[in-house]
Figure (cartoon, rainbow, N blue to C red):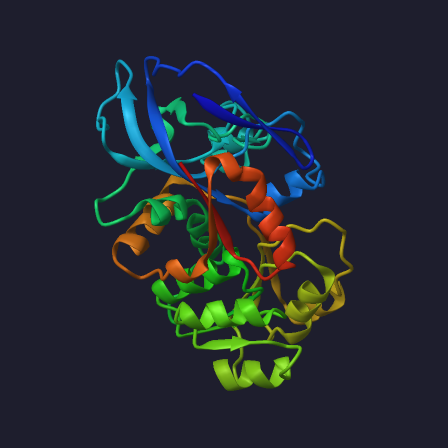
Length: 339
């Protein structure tokens, strides 16, 4: 079978390796879709601080079960599935206290350990989730990023009946905003400096999508969310100007959830955090309950996903996918690799 290996930043080669078999407790997945995410792009550019080379990418994945190992129940050949890509130690404090997603020794498939960038991928059955027939392969590959938003909402204490502001309308910001809508938020507003991403937000039914480059952000918050402004603000960009806006525009008592990954340390006005009794919350990944909630939202038709797929590439054109993302200069959302 073919396996795509990123041997160094910007270089992908294909290897012919034997097709693996499912060991006891494992299933073998025939991979159908691989989504390219922002962290993958960092690896492509050599800017991911925790990814060594060579690496097999692929953590936003869907496929069908080709083989079931001994001792596995509840899964069978032909099932449409996705999987959770965390590899944890099982013995550290987080792992033994229900927080395995922030394991002290956390590894993520496609980064610190090989991912599913190959035709067949063996994985522990406990990490695999069977999907209902109503979910197609594209949607199945997007369960992972939807779960990021679902978990962020849970970290905020929920958003039902609340006003929500999402700063950043990239894939994660868009999916988080949609998840907030599906979770019963009263009003949802999303912002971005990209006209393309604002357009995509509209196509996903996010009616209050604002470009601060063209509109006054403070005024638009009041227009979209009312005089009480945002109960919860999600920062989904990971740069100083947006976390500055989050703190500056927060109402007293607002919760700010940091979703974006900061490559450069920002300066934050902690004086305002203290004076306004703001709550700053971090969020990293997800747990199984977040995956189940994401699957529930998708299966119920509460997530509009098709407008987020910018382009598709065959598996043997993996590198072309990255070239297309570069050529888009930020005006790209989800690129799918098809097998």
